[in-house]
Length: 447
Image 1: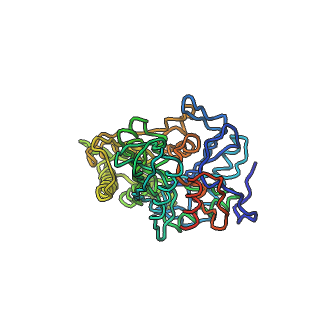
Image 2 (image 1 turned 90 degrees about the vertical axis):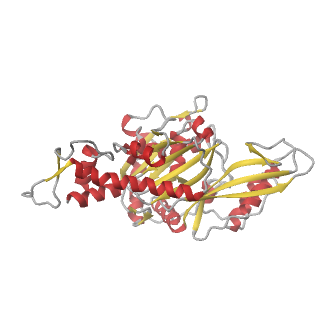
Image 3 (image 1 turned 120 degrees about the horizontal axis):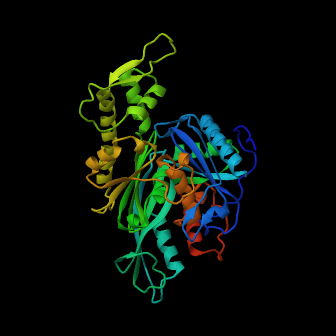
């Protein structure tokens, strides 16, 4: 069914739960939009598409279009972004045979970053309860101060009891003190609200933002990799971002506003060709690793402009690779240095998993091995075995990961839906609600 052209919605937003519920056995179809600089993708999943026994999912519909209006990790034209979202969702709806009410958005825009908050609360002479967890969470949230930024994830990294670390669920244990390390993932506030407005202009309910490197990791990493330690690098068109896992939990997120589109622009300038011609040349002949005798091998690229008499651009293959390699190295080195100064708890044996459309460029894996001095593998969506070949590559990993988060978690202290901006300030605190829900309400009323 065709979706109406983007416009400001008139109806008030419906009620949104404060905390992430357990995935429902039955319910409406859900949608995830992956918003990047090169493409906008929508994946739709129906409740029957979740296989809890095998921990897999299947999609009911997929749609994607070229992205417009996203530049350098920011929203340059909200109207174009809204139109791209509406078109991608409409195509997915047509395949799935459903109409979505709302979507969550996976993106690496907005200068994603994270920081960890530590807290400790005293315990009584009784087993640790939900109330004790709530007090620890509230104590951690009280330390969160984000000037000009919007939190999109609030995830427990680790619990401890009397200094004993590595506790995944302290309930039922005894001790004198309960410690919590909380990860706060945030993005630029103006980008957050620009994306929210674009979704609403597409006549969809905005259900929050999921950090693309987090979503990609959920889809690409093995359980053992999350437990033993891993770094997932999502190489998008306009942004390259990473997530770090240790002991099964997300413990760091970061990003740089450089991606595959910058490589394409470098080629267009260096070879004096069009952007479309540079992208095609990169796909056909590009590599981030040089080899012997490439000065003698010539490549051909279309000229700029529409002059039918213009001759093609002829250049040695070594020139093309000499343009690509420095940009790829620079991007990965930027991430490496930011990771070093962040103090993130990266295990010495942690490997790297590359995903995203930029990871498909030949030679990127070899460059990453040299820059990080760690084992590197290429990642694809693991939890959607029935995807068509055209949608099962690294470029679609974040979309699958967004569905994985909805279907299987992990659960968050405050859900991305609640963080989407629903004000709890004027709501009464129901004493029958869970302690964690009350802590979430307090946080949202005070950020």
